[in-house]
Image 1 (cartoon, one colour):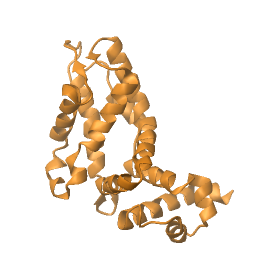
Image 2 (tube, rainbow, N blue to C red; image 1 turned 180 degrees about the horizontal axis):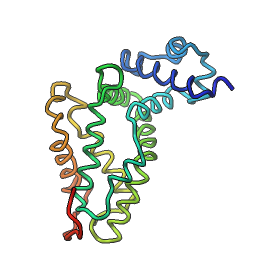
Image 3 (cartoon, helix red, strand yellow; image 1 turned 135 degrees about the horizontal axis):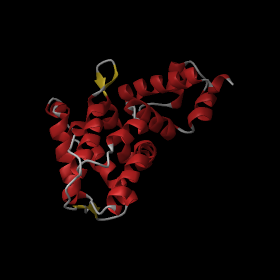
Image 4 (cartoon, rainbow, N blue to C red; image 1 turned 180 degrees about the vertical axis):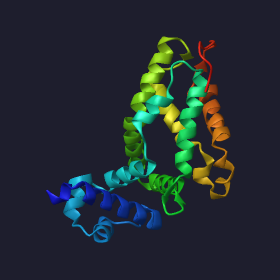
Length: 216
């Protein structure tokens, strides 16, 4: 079916993302997106469901999550903190990456945070999709680290949920446009986020251990 073609899906996502960035969630209608993408509303509902689901898919598409890359970063032969910092740094770099022209991804996240005030289900759906993309390899990693007693506190799903929420929602660049330049130092920003997570944000205690292989 034409409505299911990959090209049409991509066009709808791109036009929707552009309009959400310009007008915000509340200021955007499915009619606006359908007109900009040159499709009927029925095609959008068939492909994406409702407006919330479309917004969530736009965000994940713009984020460019990569489960294969995530698994490659989550090495079992390196110190836990170093591994999590590497993972968090990838996330922060993604925040600064342009989505449309020079507009960075964190502008889209601001739209999400603003929309979540009146539509709390939006952040939940976005995080559900994000967890399904990045969360699976991260949860496997936390499970292995708990089994090896390199981490203590909570179970793997709990740690996964809180780690993603920590690096996702504690990044000041999302809330303060003036801080974007400061976050160009993605390594320091990642270290701050991981330390916040390990030192109590999720009630996690980092077990003492000596890795057999050097860090990154």
